[in-house]
Image 1: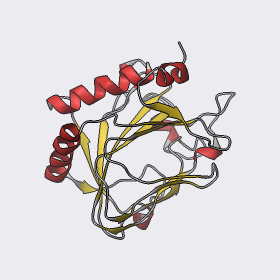
Image 2: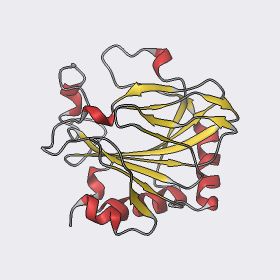
Image 3: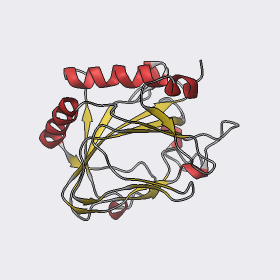
Length: 209
């Protein structure tokens, strides 16, 4: 069964009308209890968010981030749910990440796939290769702002607690898809929390041997 067939077989999953992009929303994927537990972990361990690039620009991504390790029961449970949703072999999944965005914080337009022309690709190609699918869950709802925008695909999504976005970073022939460009728009009031999972084309490991 393909990833898209697997996703559409999941309760609450719908393919969104997106130009040149395979994009799905799964409503109520996470429970309020799961969201609250994940937020507590993020608040306890958050640090400034990194950017994978040869020359990272600090103002490009101004959120805070933490890895979510499966030793925490709620993290292990969410990992299982995501793997079941996509049908992708769990060994291809990176560690879950949590992000916190305060007022004015954002993640400017970017792609999740790796730019194979940059030097950092030398490390990524031996630690699992290209990022294929992305999954991002909203853990709460900020008072204003913080929408996820896919400018090329013509879709803008308002955060709704427990809802999950899933998209394919590759095109129909398996090459990086420019239409997967997306951004976390600035939070205007309140705080936004999200959970992110990336899948690779091959088994992922944190560092090359």
